[in-house]
Length: 356
Ligand SMILES: [Zn+2]
Image (cartoon, rainbow, N blue to C red; front, side, top):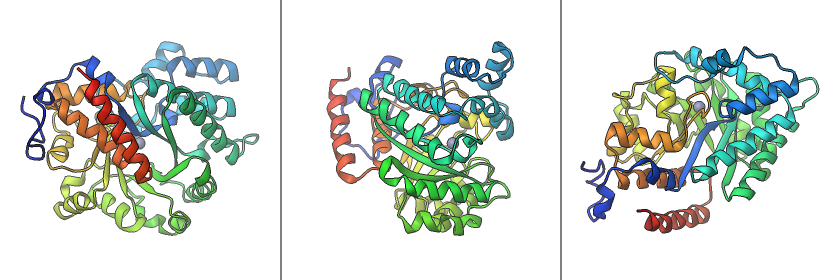
């Protein structure tokens, strides 16, 4: 099948035109820039931690059906329902550290080299677990896993649209830990009725400290949400951006400024934001937008970056050359300095040469 980006790549190797198989995709070096700690733990860890902490969960098979959403047809609130269970074990420093470390291990096992994990730390504060302890536990887990497996990790702190006060506390702690592994700030949660522009004041501290911003936008609500995130919150990346194509001028702006689109196809299908057959990722990629492929919630969507790339290859005509561009887009979009981006891109090129 002809590649999707032929108009951009005139001298591509003919092997790049081939459709990749699962093994080739697994061996490809990758990035995952949009993955939530609270929805990406191992199912066994969920059971194990619940037992250790005495957290009551439904019987195993019922729990499995509630947290792993394999099919389409749920709305965002149904999708988010899974998190009442997964997050119930994370109000504990040992569990936070473990889940973060295991997430790096799982990513490393599929050759993810740049991993930016996000979470809303205010969700996990309890009477005995303070906000800074929550953040430090996750940073420790990421650093442990990262140094053991050679993965470049970073933490993105999330504010939550429905809770201005929690977002303000999250912003403060994010800035405090900028020199210790926090690489960005995100605004997540319900889009309709909670426009990004309402958070301008809260984002002052983020902007004053030059912490890079990505915002969940255009997932369950229109292009206006994306425009707001860029214009009012200085977002340099957009989580999902499914509705971007609704505004042509904005579409061109996102292209010209190389604003990163963190695409999460399975998640969009499971949350009802899009369908596999009509997902805009094919158009975004063909038009040369800075698209990266991400998992969002590895447990809830029963996915990995490998599986997401398999979906693109199997259902949307992406060939080997296209997937190489996508993984490099991930490196270019990561909240990393140029010298690191260059080093990692060079290492990716070297590894591409060793692929069959
Ligand atoms: Zn997300």
